[in-house]
Each structure stands twice: as C-alpha cells, then as structure tokens.
Image (cartoon, rainbow, N blue to C red; front, side, top):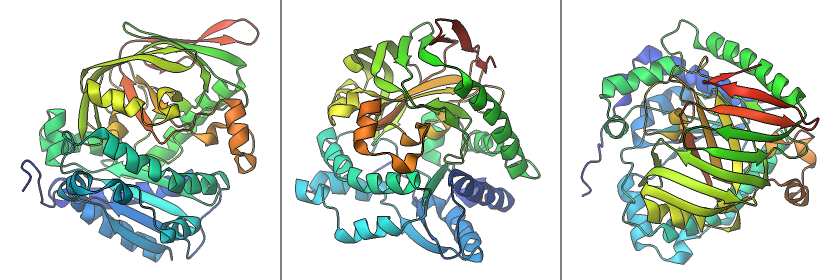
Length: 412
C-alpha cells in the first residue's frame, strides 16, 4: 500500500451542502458560458471526477439530468492505480487508444473535470518518458475535442475540491484551504453566479481594450523576468470564459516564433506526480535554449523533450488582483494561475496554444493556417506562474510604447 494517500470522502466534511450546491451551479454556468452554441436537450456531458469529489459529482449529475442532458460518469484512477499503470505497463499499453474512444469523442458536447487529488507526488520515481508516451498518444483525442470546440459543438470546465494532500502541500490547514476555495468561487455569497457575471462584464472591458490596440510585441519585466513576446497576426485576448472555475486571467496564445528573453516561475509546480521549484527558462528565436529548476530539474528537462513544440510558448496570461480573492499558494495550478495577492500574477505555458485566441472564425482554422500564424502544437501545456511585482508594456505597430499592466492591475 502507498502511504500518505487519504482514501476518505472529504468534500462533505469541509464544504457544506449549500456550498456544494452553489459550486455545482457555478460549474454548470461555466460550461454553458464557455460554449459558443447553446446546449440542447440530450446533448452528451461527461463528468470526470477523482474519488474525493464524489459528493459534488452526485449533485452535478442530478442537476444535469434535470436539464435533460445525457450524463456520462467517469471515475478517474486512484494514485495507486496510476502509479501501477506507469510502473508495470509496456509501451503498447501506455499508447493504446481504442476505436471506441474516437467515436465517443466525436459525439461529446461537454466535459467537466472535478479535481480532488489524494496525492501530488506519487509518480516522482516514474521515468517521465513513460508519462510522455501516454500523453503524446492521447493528443489525437484532444485534437478531436479542440476541433469540436472550434465549431461551437463542445465546451469544458473544471474545478478543484479541498483534500488533505492539497492542504498539506500548500502548508495550510484543511479549513484554511477550503476557505480559499469558498471565497475565490464566491460560494459564500447569496448568488455566486451574479458575482461571476460581474467579473465576466469587467473582464470584457479589459479584453475589448487590449483587442483594440495594434500590439506588435509585449515585454514583461520583473526582478527575475525580462521576456519579450511577439503577439502575432489575427490574435485576440480571452479570459473569464467559463472554462475554469475560478478564472480571472486574461490570456492569449502569441506567435511562438518571436519569444526572446528570460522567464522565471517563482511559484512551485506539481505536475504528473512530480514537484518542481524555481524554474527559469531562457528563450532565443522562439525556443527554450536553457532551462533549470532548483528542484525537479531532471523532470523539467524530460518535459521539454516531450515533442518539438514542448520548448515553445503556447500561452501568455495576466491576472488583475482586483478580481481575484486568492492570496495563498494552493499547490494547484487552477488556483495558482489565478493568484491575486499584492501584485496579481503572470503565467506562461510552454507547449500547445489555444486556437480560440484566433481572431477570425475558428471553424475555418486548419493545421496549416495555425502553423503559418505561429500557433504552437504540442502534447504538453504546462503553466508556469510568477507573482513578482512586474511591469508589462506593449510596443504598438505605430511605434508607440504603452503600459498594459503594473502592480497587479491592468492600466486600461
């Protein structure tokens, strides 16, 4: 038996029944907001959930059934199962994709992921190459869903529930950890959805401002960062789309070919059962040429070798501290990439781009068009977060230089 893994239902012990009901309502709001076309009765919605998220999964199932949605429930592997799989499987097992999965993805209209991890480091002794093989193999399924989303036929959202493991790794009590989730998602408010609609409205003003600017390049400067990115042609900024609960970030997927300089992630990262701390990347001509981490350096190097696009930029994001109530490290990317605190946060992602940041009709996007526009393609998408005091400026196509973001606030 693996030690340090809590096999108990914790959500009902920490989040109240009322909070869970509100959480479910917000998640459904997110799923519906994220989709360009409205859901119809008997659309197919999948709920993927960790063991400790069962209480919320049951509530969501009831609410979706009442909306006449065909609801598929998929319990995820426990840490023991996941470790056993990567320990004892051969390459054929790790890369197996059944024909039924292709058909299944072709019909899926929505996906909800309820994260409640019982372990964050159970794969630390697994060769990352084994994990990469499985990740790369499943890229074809993600491509199917990406295309369906571009056509307005699919949307997704996700959330995190408190677990002892998350609280321990964040160095918070379970009560403190849960309180961060409750306030971040407005579950302590009478009508959380009205709060989210207000955030959506405010973010639309920022996105409208950013998308009106003829931006050529963006420069991020902080104590340990000096990074310049090329925005690229036919780009737009997105954010607060319903895809993540919570989400306060404003982001885009720039032209990876114009990335130059140094980026430092001062928040730790838990990925694929591994812990990585103090990541510094140096970009030249769009690709990482130097990479180091204070802890987890070997794992970092393996991730960058996943495929050709793993060393390239897929996302650039900023969070306005006026929106986010998150002020603690949460050991969870969903919350950490939406950190508010004193200075908000920036995060970049190495790996695949988000094609919905294309400013034209995404339904007409082809892979050739994506390549020509500098949208990165990879099986990897790894968010790396910086919470330092920073200044973000833009050089416009007119030659003018303006400040976009300073001291955690957009300057629109």
